[in-house]
Length: 316
Image 1 (tube, rainbow, N blue to C red):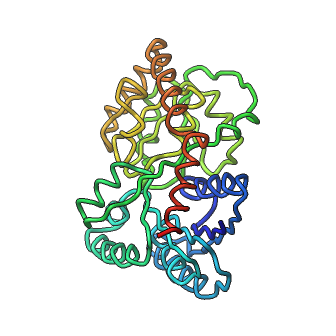
Image 2 (image 1 turned 180 degrees about the vertical axis):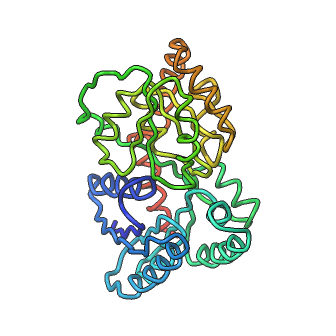
Image 3 (image 1 turned 180 degrees about the horizontal axis):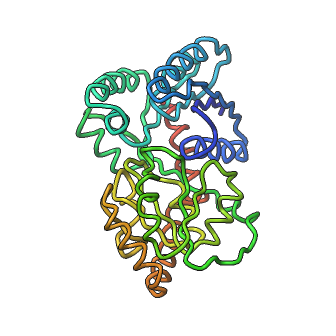
């Protein structure tokens, strides 16, 4: 099969998943071309500029593909104009809800209108979150295909053994409002350990720091299914996260990690300090989480579902 993948970038969460999927498909003998869409990196101009540039790049695309797969809502504009037998659009979280958190209710209403329009351009809609699947069913009456986003366990072979840093708490992600980095910063002085921020670091370096840490905190205000949680699970690093978006699909409280409410900084602080001194709970959470990710989120288990999905789509 011949694919065109469209994404704002091919690193990080959504882009990283698109890259891993492209690599897995190429290893299986398929051809994948990646289209990167530029944007203006200013808060209120980011998505509008991306939609405009996405449209232009899609219109300029001359190649014909079996499958054109866009990996977020704004990428759908390029998907619409690109030439392909079938079009696939992936939603990572509920787009209009995310816009509401970042901007306003009025902007969210506009986003809902765009969402509905762009979805109609796709032959098939997918999501990596069961919660997002349910929300879109309730909100727009749409049936999205659930296709999880796994981790590539082979990549971890190049991460060397590291010395554990005592009571090291790590944050991995962007320096942005939606990721809740400010929530962690506001309680940092009261944490009985050292907080390390991995922001815009190369993946290898980030994984080394994560591997050396006592626990990771994911204080997000909104999420889909964070890749870093699955990576922490694989490295057996205990996770404390907010119960937003698809996070509860990964983190079962007191089983595979600890959950706290978003914006509840005191609850987050309490859980961090308690887990730092509870070695038995650290061991329990990390062991359960490792088993969970191995059994549910590896390419060996999930790649056949993607290939079957694409093949069936081409047959319709």
